[in-house]
Amino acid sequence: MKANDVKYGRILVGLARFASAMLSPLLMPTYGVLIALLCSYLSAYDVGLRVTILLVVLGITCVLPMFFIATLHHFKFIVDKKLIDRKERLWPFVFALVCYIAAAYYLYSRVHAPMWMVMFCAGGALTVLVSAVVNMWWKISAHMAGMAGIVALIYNMHVQITEAFNLLWVMIVAVSLCGILGSARIILARHTLGQVIAGAINGFLCVTLLMQLFG
Image (cartoon, rainbow, N blue to C red; front, side, top):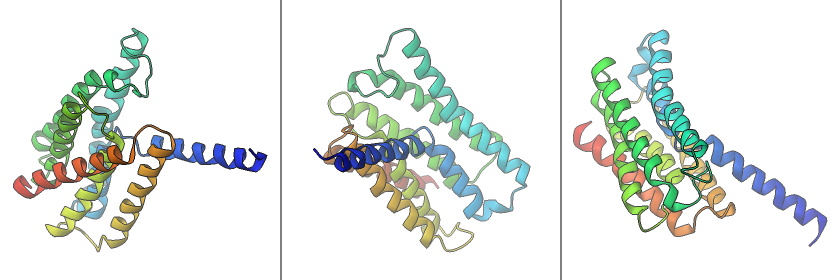
């Protein structure tokens, strides 16, 4: 193999790892809430309130699950923090499910956020539940489920006319990131094409279903 090919391969893998880290499923609720607070009529909320909401959602749906996974790793319940082994994903999925439900409850009871925003987090919880069940037999992509949930949020914000401005370019970016993330997961050999597609379908349908029915 030529040296240039090796260098190109390393760069490609590095970019794939970067994309996977930046588009981690643990960050998707925060990204979604950020989009909702900036791109809908909720942008009229006080800046301090929006920052508080964002930080609380980040703490509940990202920091707490990361701490839980680190604890499992510390006590040798799991071998790899990246949860590459399908069999090690069950309890992290269960804990993430509880966190997503807690985030939805926070938005509903404390913030009194509109139902479509609450249902985005509830849809995330449903996505995690489906992923956990499927994961018992097959390693579905949680990364793609999370990213597709963001696409579903943007789509439903447009359909329900909650957007503060035309979200066409936001949607284009989100769909492009779906393609990049899916490619990254395949490049890193974390998932097959089928698992990537199944994850995307799961995330989009779960979020859309709850936002359309209850949003």
